[in-house]
Image 1 (cartoon, helix red, strand yellow):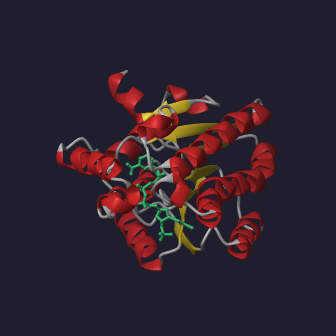
Image 2 (tube, rainbow, N blue to C red; image 1 turned 60 degrees about the vertical axis):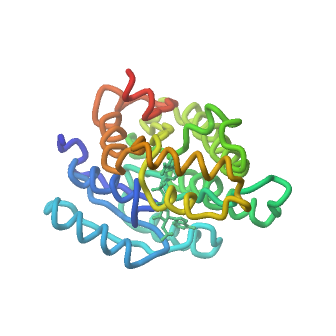
Length: 260
Ligand SMILES: NC(=O)c1ccc[n+]([C@@H]2O[C@H](COP(=O)([O-])OP(=O)(O)OC[C@H]3O[C@@H](n4cnc5c(N)ncnc54)[C@H](OP(=O)(O)O)[C@@H]3O)[C@@H](O)[C@H]2O)c1
């Protein structure tokens, strides 16, 4: 991996496991210092130790916080703004919950999903963007899902589809707003990736989330169609470090990456 991010600092949310952990590792190998954020300290430590072992140059910091909690999110933002620059922001943390028929989903469950999947990334980007624009160079990536391209394909995942669609609309709008500042904003749809999120869906009661939805995820898993977090992270790093690096307002879809 080319060391294209030497001297840069990257904040990766949801970096304790799965796709976020793999993206953090990739950015560190590309030379960035990394700040890893999630709620579970043990998982963050595991990611941090793996990065320290494989990328001796990278400085690694761990921030344990729940981004759905207003006070914790405000503290994270205040700490970031009183520290050094953040050059790369990967808004990756998300939930696929709540799953099930729309009539069974309460407004509170919906609010929780919007908090982590939309409000948190929007708030982080909004807080950091002015300083990024002043510096004249930054990369924001919002991790979405291919469900946005086919919302009817995930019956039982209405909240997830709606939050990711909102995140993509926000991203493209912010990209236009920041155009010319040196701050790019792009969407990454990571493909079907073998992570805890996928495992959690497979473990759910089909009566609650819908047999069709659960069977689809089980079948996909057993067919070997899922990619590894590393493969997905590599594709994103390829965009960030390659000719796409300076683009803004793009939707990078792993599906398109492999067929292009
Ligand atoms: N896996 C797939 O097939 C797939 C497909 C399409 C899109 N995606 C997207 O890819 C991204 C990563 O997914 P993944 O599969 O790697 O999921 P994952 O294994 O469930 O990891 C999610 C990460 O987000 C963190 N997180 C969740 N809620 C949080 C909160 N309230 N505050 C702070 N951190 C929080 C989790 O840590 P804690 O629980 O410790 O907080 C974890 O580190 C998500 O945006 C997801 O929607 C995944």
